[in-house]
Image 1 (cartoon, rainbow, N blue to C red):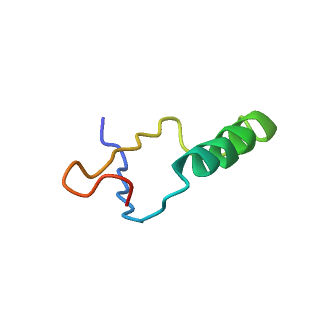
Image 2: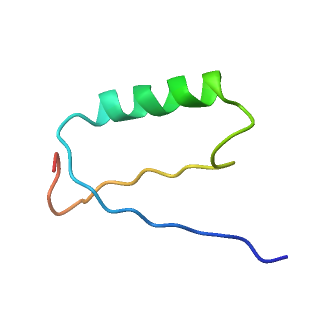
Image 3: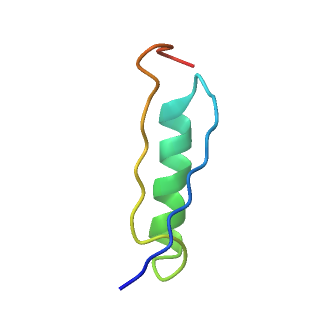
Length: 48
């Protein structure tokens, strides 16, 4: 079964705030949006 993958590259020093907004969205709208989210970090440029 084929799926959809979207990669979005962005920079922030406020990763905790971004993850909080995401969690709030998922709680408010459980039937909308992605079924899985993976957030990674740049090991060569930590904190960027």
